[in-house]
Image (cartoon, rainbow, N blue to C red; front, side, top):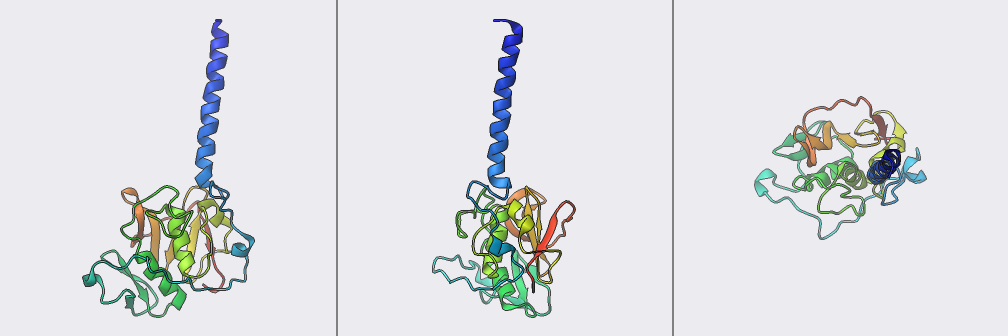
Length: 212
């Protein structure tokens, strides 16, 4: 077999591998991933009707009574406070913002899971967009999970008073009442957690919901 023919076969095989890999990544990092979670027109609408998610009996509860005397810890003022991994919702915040903060507290021991939280708001683990979707759902502004790329067109452009979503094609995080909700910390993808430290928004599109 001529050398040029062997080289052409090798190039064709390499091209197929690269195309397959790119397609696999795009399943999770595009606005229309493997779960079919393209941002809906309703989610992008400037007029948002808030709703309250129905409570579920199997929702996780706080495990350490010492962390809080209730499952709805609050702090005075307009900024959330983080104590031993548990966020205390600011008393001045709207009720749906408080509910979102308390709901995210239940995720603090969940692991990072690629694609987690996309098929259902309740999952054994969460990736970045799954965690942000979970928070927005409990704030009453997102009825179906979305992938990270879809958040680039979600809501309205710019920073919100209570919730700002920072989105790009491959990652999304949110700042809620001054605390960052992110799956990425100093140690990498370590799960959906509240973070005290700030993160640069460079390269991210800032989105919010009108009124929040």
